[in-house]
Length: 328
Image 1 (cartoon, helix red, strand yellow):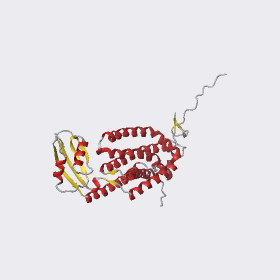
Image 2: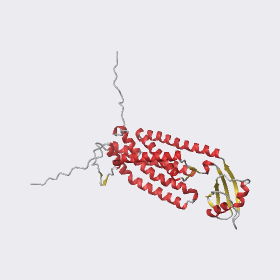
Image 3: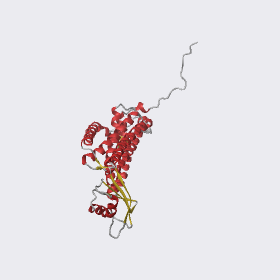
Image 4: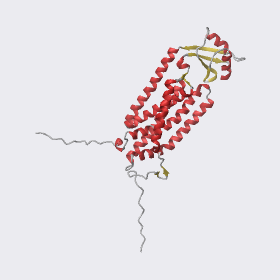
């Protein structure tokens, strides 16, 4: 009696349901198992951050409150600490020194200083032994200009969020678009709120970091949304939570690699960038982890809560000709 030579069944095609819990040889991480606790935690922490922002307020830097800015050129390379010590010894308060390309060109920022003939006082203060300094220009920013700049900065963030909503709606689906914007708003509130809680200085460099984080978080949300759309069209028989978990698992490796790459650059700025980049790097560090968390739990959880399903991504093809009743 001959043995049967029938071949085993071939694996299921991409149009058939997969075994939930594994994708090929890799396990599927059940991210959405924790969507409710994550949503509650995010809501509570966001309200706490808003409370500190509106009650304690931000420790606004010179860009928003007004102050003095001066560009200085030295004949020889100089250290930032030397210039700061010289200014403090001359009676200038809270000076911040940054390099402008080389170690001979610097910019000095300070709060509004008392006394007259500020340019002459500053020129005398920055002179160092065997290192002549030339004050190129001195600018004074009033509090009214700083307040106007602050209002425009808030408007820039709001405009960015609105444009993100329009873009993701056109590119993907409205439920995912609203989830992405809520995620971006969450990142902004939490990052700014942490600065309010700890009283860290908030200036234009920190605002630039917040705007950069909006772009970074949106990019992460777009990658996840694209994979969700692809899997909804490809995987049949799976419920929306399964599809989202599979999509997040498939993009996890890419997310880890991106976060690690940005983190290395950010740590370099944090420890080697000097005072000028320190708070920018701190804001990026906070927003990096907040943005990664929100792209997983905020945007996708909202879309699922709003009833995201396969029909949202199926293109409805209209017939080329429609039958109509002709009345003689």
